[in-house]
Length: 467
Image (cartoon, rainbow, N blue to C red; front, top):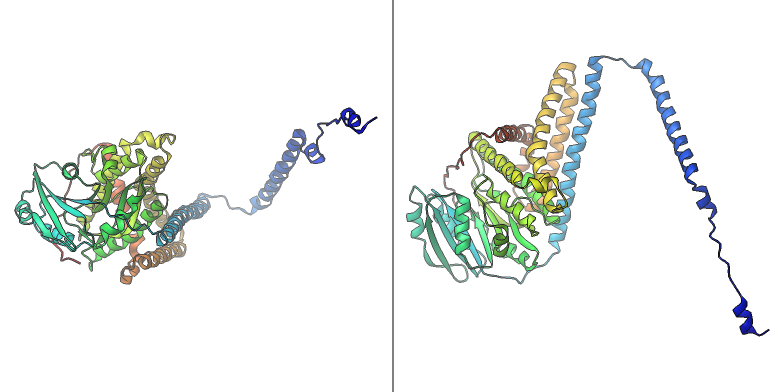
């Protein structure tokens, strides 16, 4: 028989056999093993309970003490998870930002300046805009029916003005009073630029704000860039506390959100937008008291990404007395809740736009859940400390939180090259300032859900010299 015939007559039989390991993984044996493990663990737990139960004093007092310890542990766990989650993502953003070079993109920019009763600050605001380190821009002032001499002062600024590198066109639009959202929409509609910068009438921008922010629009997915807001009128107790809050409580979370390109609020004092993105989103709306938050959510819902530029700085006046501060935060909170309600479909259905759903839940948590939890937690722990003698434990709890705030303040101040003198304010920041703000937020939330009527409540400007 030839070799070829031998090959043809050869047959191979492959048997579908299980390995010994597969045989050991029989479903019935798996169930038996699980029952053995669960039974062993259950027996161990029952034994521990049986041994320790006679030594346990069962009383209402001991129950409250143990529940206090558990609650304190859970409170600190949530706080630390929130803090370090934001801190880590913020650090990752700063690291990425440091090595990310996106220079070489200089489109024409329209700066929209909506003003209402800003005669004290409009001139210095416009003059500061003429000093910007950018050559390809214009300024559009929108007078929203001011009752003072804002229109007269603005009229003297109109024309071709000398900028830092070239002539800058300054235009003025006078319109009946209709609110900031309509004023911004008027300026945006008038603009022919690819990029628009929206700001407040009292704000003063850093010299390189446009140059540093506009470069990110070289990425076609970016629909807007949020700027960095800083307090201008410092060296007073409440304004210094707000200066620290803006650095640690607003800019650090914004940097963390920028790591995912999902910034949740583009601040009113400085935000740059691709005009096409604003047109897609349907412009600003006037049906909330936080038009900036509402527009941000609409941009995200339409698939645009939003970035944060820490060197695009806007200096703005902050409330100097507690009453003005609470009025401001009352309006902010109710406006954010109104914006969230407008987008509630995305809040409950992540399949529509997961990024927008994530942003909405983070806003809902910061506006409603965390303030309530912070207030109840403080009241509960202080009451138990006074009644059951946990004073030393509460002191160490406060000291731990103060140390956490001090550490994060040092980090944020170092990153933004801010004034180190703001760091000691972190000692009273959480237990006094943040608690007061959270009480205001909670009351605002209650009134919003009850449907109480509210008015805009404009901050009275004092006029602060340029930086």
